[in-house]
Length: 441
Image 1 (cartoon, rainbow, N blue to C red):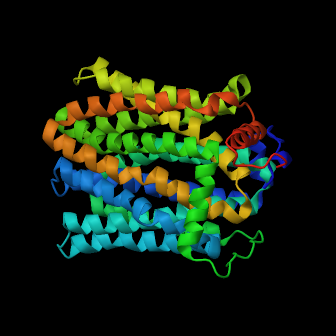
Image 2 (image 1 turned 90 degrees about the vertical axis):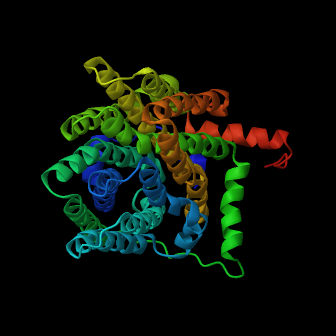
């Protein structure tokens, strides 16, 4: 996918885009519903463990880690395998498997065999399917939209993710309050069924998967990892995103323990706090075109990390359950949520545009292995720190930790480019200086 062919301005208003792209519309609907289901599960699992099984902070940490561990376990090969499979078929299969896995929970409850170990197993299966779904849908995206429309398409996808970030936690809290946790998770299973049906409705032609002869899975994996290592943008993207995910995973793990146990907040107050704080995702999505226009794509990504760092700092200094403290916690949570789409829309779009089509899934899988492989580590660390030091102290440590990706973004080359074309120029000049490229390349 040559960078020179990519236009950096959105050709049509983004809100008209969804009406004109039928294939993308089905993919977007499937991804939106699937992300909503994943968000509900992400919140419902630890809350179910806390309320139904009276789990400890370390057990909640293990549960969160198992839901994210597949990115570390399967992320090595997922991209390589998806390059050899049809991406849309992967989307359908993983949606159905997640639906069935979630339905096992109410069955276990009816049989009176529901245990924390049962939740561990289901969480791991859900996470494994999410690994393959997330990598496959990014590969499927390039078959339903042209390169010029990727920024617009990714903005739509991040918008739906923001909606899920806002409504998913609140929906999970409401479902848990209205009905039992296992039944709430069973209702969540319907989201994956709908997602599978939407993917099945896509009629755009899909390229035949490549099955290169004489290459092993390991060799293909190292090809994807090597492309990241030799590309300046992808390398720094991996470093910054991996550190962010390590901290964010730890934050999510301890956040609900802190609110429920340390501050002893009512479920309704927690739901409202999470709902309002999650609205920061909308602010991040809405700000992307404005910040891109004012500062360029690179500085937008730097500003995103600074926004998240400010949110972490607020969470570190805010303590207690007074109205002012709750307001500060909500603001910090909102800033962290705003930072993610502000960074991701540009990072994902740039990656898709500078990566050759034949390496798309392998590169996505490899970078997800590096970036998302830190998620279970962060969850485990936060869970055990919560037991050892308490929720408040752990929140301070995690909040201050968000300053690290801020520092990394400030010393990265992101500040050097305004457009996607300049990403390629900066990288090529650096490679020539290092002797990686020939002078005539």
